[in-house]
Length: 265
Ligand SMILES: Cc1cc2nc3c(=O)[nH]c(=O)nc-3n(C[C@H](O)[C@H](O)[C@H](O)COP(=O)(O)OP(=O)(O)OC[C@H]3O[C@@H](n4cnc5c(N)ncnc54)[C@H](O)[C@@H]3O)c2cc1C
Image 1 (cartoon, rainbow, N blue to C red):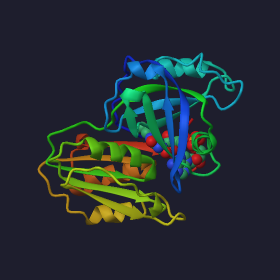
Image 2 (cartoon, rainbow, N blue to C red; image 1 turned 90 degrees about the vertical axis):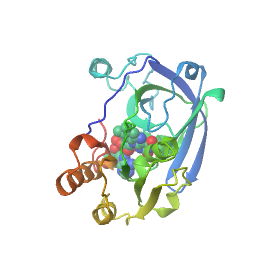
Image 3 (tube, rainbow, N blue to C red; image 1 turned 30 degrees about the vertical axis):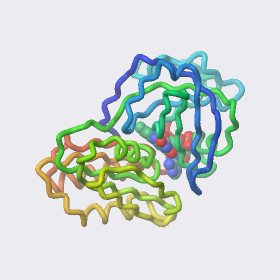
Image 4 (cartoon, rainbow, N blue to C red; image 1 turned 135 degrees about the vertical axis):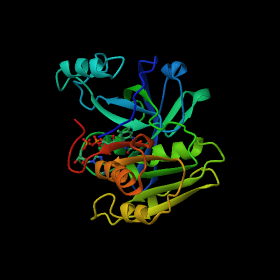
């Protein structure tokens, strides 16, 4: 579930190839992609995200990918037979360098299940991908307090928001990881406290974050929240804020980034 507003930018289908990869922490691989198409890419910062097309099998081609991934584009994508259309997954821009036309993407490597995670763990330079920009989920507001809540899958998004928030922003970021060795050094406004939380790998996402959230002092005239990660975190945080703390629904941006035990599509 999600209430993120998707923007469909003019950059269309952007082709790129893998330049290098780096294991930045035990469970994260940073894949750097680049190419001439990035010359026409509009970087917005914050949690800007995109649809990443990965042709994992020889038979899969990028040639029949749509230019946009709204309802029409998605339906067109589905008309390309399985085995010919590439796998599409959602990812966040961790860093973008316009001068060298490079983009970093931080992948959670979550085992052998799925496509994108295992692909990132083993991909070699030269592999060709394509992406379709979908804009930012975070909306800059006049809020006097912000709350960001996520598990490891939303670490790139929360890191980007913290980096790009106005310097006088105030609030808290709750980032729950299943391995505290995946913590990163983050740039954040002085008034935003970053709390790293750790859950046991055998516990469900949110098991540490939700109790921590209920203990937070969230007093504010206008609280703006961003809650992403495993689906139960995204919806659980929203439900808590709305039902228990009286935060207007419209002040909570939420998106289930993945669902325990279920592949994307
Ligand atoms: C807007 C948006 C931005 C995102 N940005 C990022 C990002 O920058 N970095 C990132 O790593 N992820 C990000 N995600 C999440 C990512 O799209 C999902 O984790 C996706 O399911 C990965 O695809 P897959 O092919 O590896 O697994 P899938 O084929 O989708 O799923 C296969 C199995 O793996 C499990 N699984 C999927 N993801 C995870 C996970 N993170 N941890 C544990 N188990 C998992 C599923 O429950 C399923 O059982 C983002 C999602 C959204 C919607």
